[in-house]
Amino acid sequence: MAEQASLDVDDQKEGGTNQINPLNAVKNNNLRLSGSVYIFAQHSGKALDVPGGSKKQAAHLIQWRFHGGQNQTFYLHPTNDGYFMIECLCSGLFLDIEGGSMNDGAKIIQWAKHGGNNQQFRIDAVGNGLYRIVAKHSTKALDVNGGSMNDDAVLIQHGFHGGNNQLFRILSSP
Image (cartoon, rainbow, N blue to C red; front, side, top):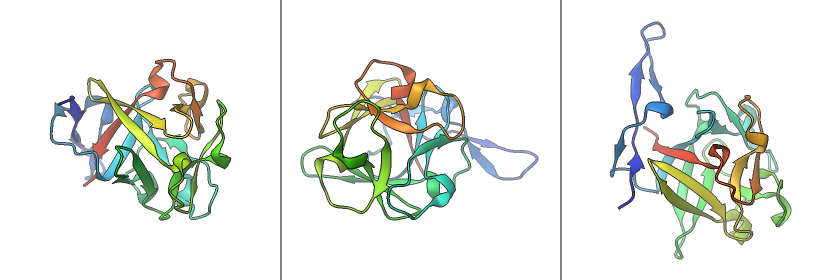
């Protein structure tokens, strides 16, 4: 079985709340690729995020510093053929490659469930608790555009090049 990540919770002294630290995640074999999860970009440590908790179709996914809100929580729905549909907990909408585009640079949006191949993703373990997320229809990887380290950087699809902006940690949410 591939190595998979679990939660690493750091107690914050000042705020009194627990904070998940994806960069220090402990490796184990307990994460099942189903259920409620947070998804963190490896290069920046930032979480995938639906801006402002939008419930609107076509809202673009971004990366944002982690706060653990519902707009950073996703539910993985396995399909019968080894892919996943990824639901945004804040809206009930699903990750979707905009317009079913096959092109590099097509944005990742949320959209009502229709079950098309542009809403299905393969999640490949690549070692060290990291995953590549690949769109079924295009075989292109989810990618933080330009390798940006900034909050608000848009998620796109792009041919796999092996950069850390195309690798993700997937951690079970409490």
